[in-house]
Every structure is written in C-alpha cells, then in structure tokens.
Image (cartoon, rainbow, N blue to C red; front, side):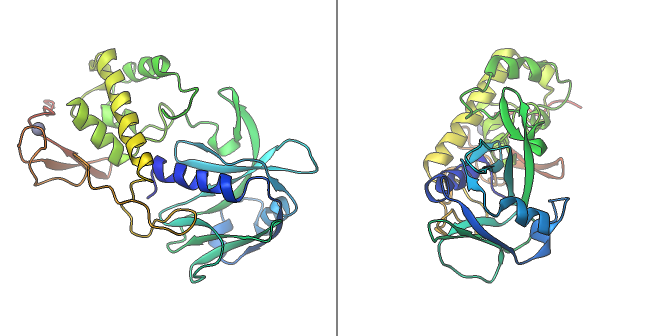
Length: 286
Ligand SMILES: [Zn+2]
C-alpha cells in the first residue's frame, strides 16, 4: 500500500511528465478501474478527453490532477486511487496489467497499471475546503504535516481533545493526514509512547514531538525515494522505489530494540499490526 512518501514521489514524477499536456484520448481497459466514477465509464472518458492537466496535487495519500478546459481554470480533477498496486507510468512498458491508457498532446502515453485492480480513476468537481480547492471526495481529509499550510498547534489541540488511543488518532485522516501504519509505529517508537495510550492523557509537547517524529520519518523516506514495502510498487517511470532498511519499529517484532535491546513485540490493533518496544513504550494498563 503506497504511503505518503510514495504518493509524493509519484506526484513529482507526474509534474514533470504530465502537467501542461492535454489529454487527447482515454481508453478504459478494465471496468473496475472506472468503478469509483459514479456517472460511469463513458462520462469519465468524456470529462478527461480534451482537457489539459493543470497541476498534480496531493493531500495525505490522496493524489489528483486538476483539469482545465479552454483556458479557464480547473473546476474538476482526476482523483487517482493507487489502491494496493496502482502505478502511473509515462512511456512504454509491459501492458499485462494496463487498466487505463491516455494519449497526451506531446505524443506520450500515460498508462495506469494495476495488478490487483483495487485502484482506479474518478473525476470529481473541485470544492473549497480548508482554504484550498480540492476534489469533493478529499474535502474531509486534513492537511498533512508536509503541507506548508499545516497548522501544527491546531492539530495538537485537536489531538489533545481525543479521548481515544493515540495510534488511532495518528491514523485518523480527518485530524492529520498521510500518517499510515508504518509511520505511526515509527513515530511512536521514536517518541517512546505506546500506541494504546490515550491521546487526551499525553501532554501537548508530547503530541508535538509525535508529529515532529512522524514528519521526520516521512521526510527521510521521501528523500530516499519513498519506502516501499510492496515489491509491486514502482514510481512514475517504472523504477523500483528504495526499499527502506532503516526502520526502527515496523516489522521488527522478535528483534532487539535499537535503543535498549529489549525484544520488540507486535500486537493487533485496528486489524493491523502495532510494533513496539515494551521497555521504551510502556504498555498502558487496561
Ligand atoms: Zn527499547
């Protein structure tokens, strides 16, 4: 599952290869790739064909391409759902899992390839949310910590009001977006906080440190080209992303903590795994 750094790597690739180009043709090769577009496949194709890609935008793990027509500013966007294995590739390649193909005005071809077909495209109207124009389906998503307009103090205050487990709050995309399971576990380990501690019981400085730690881990992953835990995942040109080997918590259960040597543990949380050091991250009493 691509996380924020991978999605940002894809977005940057799309800025270079797609922005400013017109879409001259669209072919949907698998109906599942268009299923999120409620008006249907023909409408999806009609809304994209003949439009210009104005920019490539991201909030959290959501990625979209605002579409402009006839010199007017964009009022709709392609929301790209990468799902588990979706890739946006520009140029030739293996067409086995090709789901959508779009011809571009510069002669290049954009291919949406998705082996597991959980992903797809939808065209959404742009609406005002949190001081920006975003697709309607993204309007409830909070800004992520890499966003220049991320309001750290306001997010800390919102987290402090949550009388629920801190890991659940870190994963709540309406409070802070883009922090997935991997980065939540890493931030909690760095901060020495167990994910089942109540957010409301943590101090504001402790909540601020968690945000800083999550941000730092995501920035590092981004500098390395995205951490990909899924071998299927490749960036916009089809090159494999850097495989992160420097994780401190995620996937390290049974191995010694890099800070204190205690054997790391894993427990189930929200249908996923939480990885933690029982010494550095004191398990709360139930
Ligand atoms: Zn430890």
